[in-house]
Length: 132
Image (cartoon, rainbow, N blue to C red):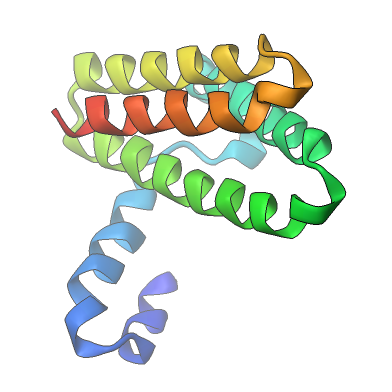
């Protein structure tokens, strides 16, 4: 289990690491899609597509930097979605998945030159909404 990773985190980060690790256990496993939660699988698929499009549209000089931001955004999204599932509140889960689904749609629908900015704006807004 991932809890074996906790001793390796600095003391100040142990709670965050523990919360993140254990909340992931409540989240459907994306490798089991589409046989698990349909809304989760659809959102996960769209997010992945949006991330791939942002990386593909990155100018070569900024490719690594943009990929790092995409990875960080993905981690934050995963945490927000996991926290929603941890609550067990179907309404909260639907709202968070809906916000990230809409954010992914905004990225997918944007022109290549605007994908990075669309990702930053849309996913930041979804993250803020998930904390409300």
